[in-house]
Length: 177
Length: 375
Image 1: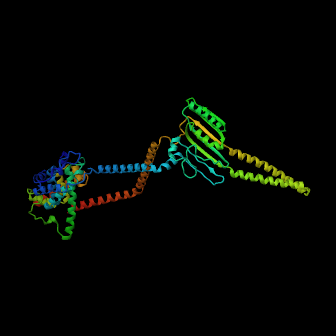
Image 2 (image 1 turned 60 degrees about the horizontal axis):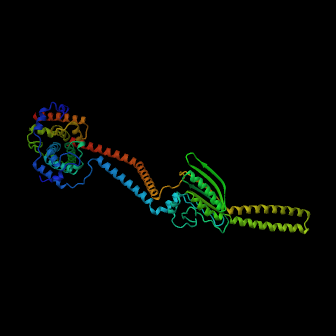
Image 3 (image 1 turned 90 degrees about the horizontal axis):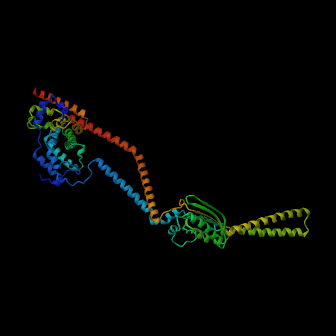
């Protein structure tokens, strides 16, 4: 924690919290979102660091009137994650492997305390389904904010969440069987 | 989270509770890593926050540059190096000069006042040839070794009704003292104290310059036009014609006295002699008219209390300021035309660019959806 306080001051003319406070408040949320989106903790760590680096570079341009810091950070994180997915897709085509498939069945990816059924069920979801679950359930973003992060309408976001939860329940039932 | 949001999660309470009870937690090494990133990338230029703010800043800077360039252009174009040209333009000085024989000079020197025109042409007034600016009452050097006809038109502003009366009387006295006369005088006065008078004056040509100078000093010279027409060649031609006719008439008269002519020839010679004598009479009359025309100068003098016809008013400094504003406004208009033209030319490209951008964005989003749905 050796950050210089002057470098972490709030955007000019705003009452937004300093960047250090933003990191302290939203790092976990961004990390959770990225873990669910990528299904890869190591990648989520790297992407979270990249997200906050980008956020810091454009922190002075951040306008709190246009959205909450968490929404803004999640959009940056999503953009970084999409780039990561593209790179992974290229790598997969090249090596005929995929990062998520390399994870051991018994290894916990999404969280330590999750039941194995839920852990496995989460793995069956697509990243698009997992990210809406992360945004709405874990990060507790409201519908419009989550829709803004995903670049879709609120209705589409709501529909996607319902389908994701339903599929998750079904997958858990399948795993239980 | 609102009630509506909770409705979306209805039926999945157990699942949601388990997910929320076991969230992934960012490791400490990540937290430290993120906080260490900040000082490394701290040196960023202080830019306006939003795109709207940046766009506004760019527009303001562009407008400031445009106005600044226009002011610089106006300042340069109204500067001292253009003084003579500007004065020539403002005061409407013109010169027309044809050949040495039958020379016609038509200088027009409207001016706000004598001092302003003197400032425009500080050097001693000289001949009107070339582009030299003229002084008011010495606009034309009327040649004294040749026969010329001079016409002058003066417009002089006087301050009040009483000054108008006095100036009218003085004008008559001036031309009388110089050997001339007032051919006609029209005097008009108005109820509001204003008025004007129009005088058709004639003075000997040799005194014309003096008369013009003194008449111009009756008030503030508003406009002046002096033209001269060379009559010397016409006089020479008429004189030569008279000599020829005289010699012809003498020959005819001698032939008639000789008594060697037949009756028919005699009648023919008599007719020719009569025609020659008539021609001589007409030519003498014309020559007299030419001499008379070259003896006097016609001066039209307008005395008025109205300032409306004053040309190029104001002092020199305000004139330059006006020219600066005119130049800046003209330059701004030119810039506006260029911007408008550029917009007209570029607008189809901008529309195409916008469509391409929207198409690419939509395709990128579709790719993202496909990627996240299939990964």
